[in-house]
Length: 261
View 1 (cartoon, rainbow, N blue to C red):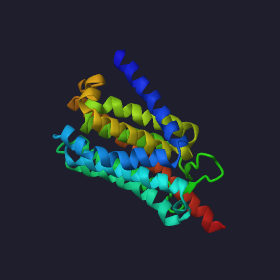
View 2 (view 1 turned 45 degrees about the horizontal axis):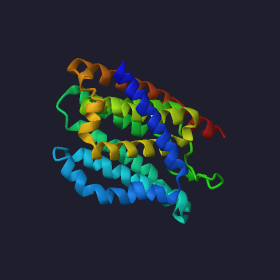
View 3 (view 1 turned 180 degrees about the horizontal axis):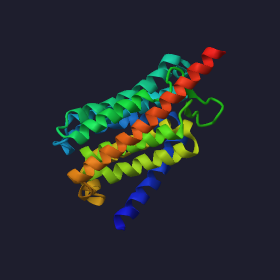
View 4 (view 1 turned 135 degrees about the vertical axis):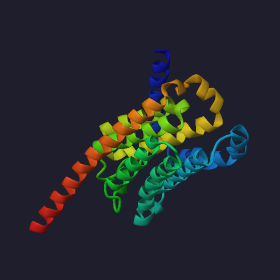
């Protein structure tokens, strides 16, 4: 019960962090996700001597995404199509980083998640012109046109399963991060990617800065077992297969209607 309360508290904190960076403007975003990591990198390396390559790639790819997105939101570069398209490409790179990590696993559960991750990319709403900047709003929100609640749920389930299998000690912490972005996405799906970036970036900075303290505060390693890993991976794959079938049916219907017109 205490752990559940902590995770609810974390979820609320990450929802608040999203609003902070959504409204904070250019300089806050650049300071926290651009300048601060440069200054803290030596301490992070010293403070996390046992971290493997994947967490470092994940950390700096997310920080790159947020810096790129901040520039897009508040400068003239955000008007350039190729700059906005790169944001969607960074999302795909972020997913494939996890897919590669699972591909190095030696158990069937990891390979089931590899399939789920690939299907997630295949069913990603079209990203050619999906990223737009809402210049009419004071916040200059980064809008993902075409994003839908079903895909957000699929992503959240897959990512939660990935963390559960690979980093069970912080599975609860990352579940709170995913839930915070999903809450935003359920209300306004086109703001989900922006919320996902800010909540994940904030959580990773905190995690790499205070790894031992955060794990001790909300350690969920006891959730994990080989049996539960297989159950989670199978359920995740079944959900992804179901969504993929609906996605293919929808695309065929759209193509058929297009041919008729």
